Image 1 (cartoon, one colour):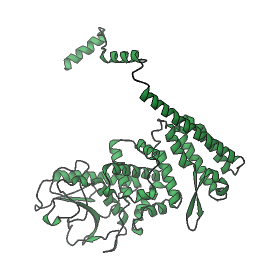
Image 2: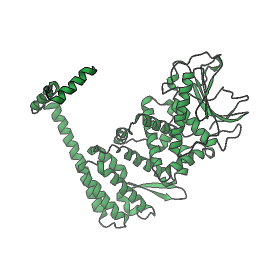
Image 3: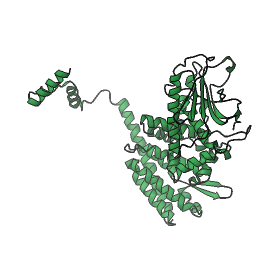
Image 4: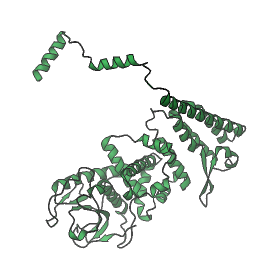
Amino acid sequence: MMPPRRHRGRWAPRPLLLLAAALALLAPVGGRAQEPIQRSVSQSRQFVIYCSDIRLRMAVAGYAETAKHGVLEALGLGDHWKFPIVIDLRQPASTDTGRPISQVGLIQTDGGWKTEIDVLLREGELKQVRFPQLVIRAILLELAYRDRPPQVGAAYSQPPAWLVEALAQAMQTRATGAAPNAALFRQLIATGRPPKIADFLKSNVEVMDPTSLAIHGACAASLLDLLVGTPGGQAGLARMVHGLPDSNGDAMALLLQYFPLLGGNEAALEKWWTLGLARTSALDSHQALTLPETDARLTPLLKITLVTDPQKKTTAEYALTDYKTFLKNPGAKAALLECFKGLSDLMPQAHPLLRPVLLEYQRIIGELARGKAHGADKALEAIAGYRELIVARMDKIDDYLNWYEATQMPEQSGAFNDFLQDAKAMETWTPPKRNDAISKYIDQLQREFE
């Protein structure tokens, strides 16, 4: 929560906000701090950019409009802005010592409320300014408070940091045409340490190194895609942003409030998040999972989370072998069907040796969901034993192959020498010159144009 600032005078372009660059906006800015500040207004007239370099002003104006279009499209909203967004890019003055290089916030002037981005163009520090995130944060602030500005002196909530990162990542993905990094999520799952939703939502991006920042951005984009994919997800995101004035900025509370279908409690949200990351890791589904990857993906799918006390919103997690206990819970059938669906989603990429395991678990879960528990104990014990046997034997086979390759193959076998020789010959082969009429005509045209 942060208090709004009040400026007296016209635009008072001595702001409280942001900048730096990530889009060739890092070019040196000409002019001196004491020169009159010039301004440019964007196409929609919402963005007012102050800077002495007209090239930088125009680049910022164009990018700001692009960012706004992306945010509004993600939230399913039209462009009905009320607060102008002032972007002040300037050389630091002697009085700016110790001042943050960028800031974003709400300010009140005699002419009304504004959202302001303030960036000091300090040489050597511009890489610390993540300009896309600054613009997106300012846009979200205007969306949230345009109809309900805070009282003068009262604190207000900043937009959820994960949403800012997600929208910035979505814009980058759209610009580059890159697909989600499914391999990254598979690696997170393979390590058995996918980020907990609570820890992820509380992450402080300001202290992250580039690698952590890239992982955080990918997870944020995944969360955004998962939420949009829920029934009414886009409208829920818009309501969440508009509901920011009524919150204390708690990202977890906002998700639970505006996306009740996710379970209404942190444990259910955590399971939904974990399964969502697993589905994201399967986006390049033409690539089959290895056996260890399949086994790691299977483990969380076989856990049943149920609400034990609706009033206290407490939950408990059960293994399938605890079915005698959790089948009495009113939510047991829905939880089992969700587990069944998770196994179905995993099936296309599952390693062939473990697909029979998934099918058997699906059969058992289907029987339990219908209330038929006869023989479930023996079936669960048998399939768990078979799964352990397959995993153990494959581990031994991998160990043997690694040992054999390292110790028993001092030289190449020569089995593929003929193929390698033919492939090398093809690299230097040139086709014979053709003497037919069409080839001669094409050769003549080529000579004329050279």
